[in-house]
Image (tube, rainbow, N blue to C red):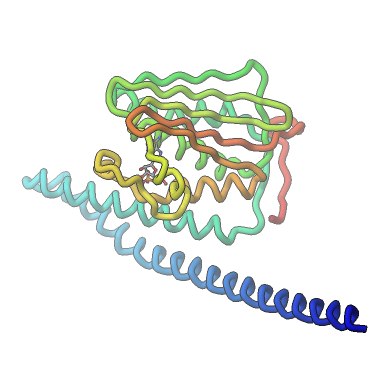
Length: 264
Ligand code: ADP
């Protein structure tokens, strides 16, 4: 009887703990939803006046004799615009449920992204190479979101690598995983910073990296997107030497372009 009553006691305690845990999780989810809504609303409200400011600055750039000042206003307005875009993307990723998925070739995503970065890389004096297998490396997902991940990783490599450096992008397939590995000879990231790198708004603490404009949102968005696609992003880096970012996604056997509308 003693043993049975001990068992019952333990079961009651477990049920109570389970209930508390469930309530806490529900509360946290609610808080998270409010946070997402708040970010989305504020960003949206900021965007309207800023679009007007950018429009008028473009006009002033053509008319004004104070070219330097107008350009400074324009540069900073664009910067603010990018920050708001990132905030909006961040909150959209948090609550988008239904989206079109397609079979996408990772090599094509990298080629498109490197096309966009070609001028910036050349101006920065960087050597950029892409290595990929002859057959497509196909994953299944939202092409726009996946392109955002690849753009973010490759543009960071270009952004955080000083002149004379290299960026090597390698696409590969291994078992049931497709991978994009982006290796740069850039500033590198300390071990401490690596552990916070994928949290929203986190930027490396070294002054050289901080002097380069950024919002600290790109990697948080990228990891979230990759996880929603069943994959992950990994980083290996040595401060002062360079970094490798690996985006890993499950391979798909669908033909490239095949698509469906799905719920998350
Ligand atoms: P952002 O570049 O807008 O600040 P990210 O979330 O994309 O935001 O990156 C977060 C931080 O990680 C950056 O501020 C930078 O300090 C560091 N980082 C990202 N990629 C690299 C890289 N390839 N080399 C060195 N530092 C990097």
